[in-house]
Amino acid sequence: MALVDNVRNSPNLAALEVWLQKVPYAVFLGIKAELNKGDILFILPEDKRLIGNPSLPALHGGVVGAFMEQAAALHLIANMDNPALPKIINFSLDYLRPARLRDTYAKCLLSRQGRFISNITITAWQEHVDQPNAIARAHFLTP
Image 1: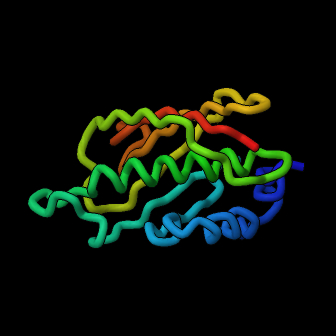
Image 2: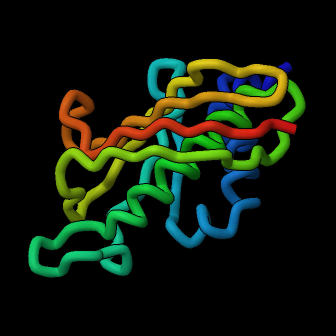
């Protein structure tokens, strides 16, 4: 049974929270996860420590990228039959608009999960899912 099945059967997302706590940078960023219509929704809570441009104020682009990469890895873990931390091969990110100082959300789509390589598309937004702040593609080496 995949971790995602355990997550869907667990009302408090305890299984995914365990993995979130295993990744120190995810803990530092304060990433949270919840279920939204059967999909995992990742949340980067508003935090002044993460500001990169104080004049807007806007989140640092590296933080947005790291949040999206972490979301992709955790989404992949949730879809593995034998969960293990995947290794990033490459990550391509397009910034579409500034990420203001407010909660940021990410949703992932597992495009392909092969024997060794998995492809994931990530969308990050703040107010409306149809107005993304950034989109990305990630390729992972899966154990």
